[in-house]
Length: 165
Figure (tube, rainbow, N blue to C red):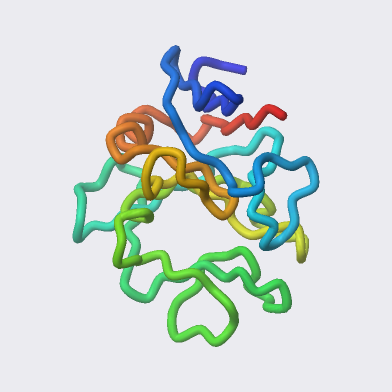
């Protein structure tokens, strides 16, 4: 582990010597992640990208990509684009990246089951803004808006998310 890793433990998310309260999946942590199980996968996951809403905030880093009105994420295990960013119109099951609420205004993408997805192993694990403190996610990591933005400005493409069991 390095000081530039994000380390999730029962005490919260540690990054560069600071601890940040966070939320995880509603069904806790798992070593056997499955699509729709509501759990956060244990392991070391690379941060492979950052997405942001340009209509709501300034670009946080030079490598962040904008979320457009047609951007979606496929969560359909039967689709060839499972666990990939896709564009509307898209008939298979998906999640909208451009949401009405602020949860995905800034998203850190991990390499969980990506780029070569194993069907059923679970779609994307994001680090995003939480709804409120203590409110669980569907499997992602949630942070307060100020903490997410502080971390996003300091991570690099070598940063890993390490989830301990």
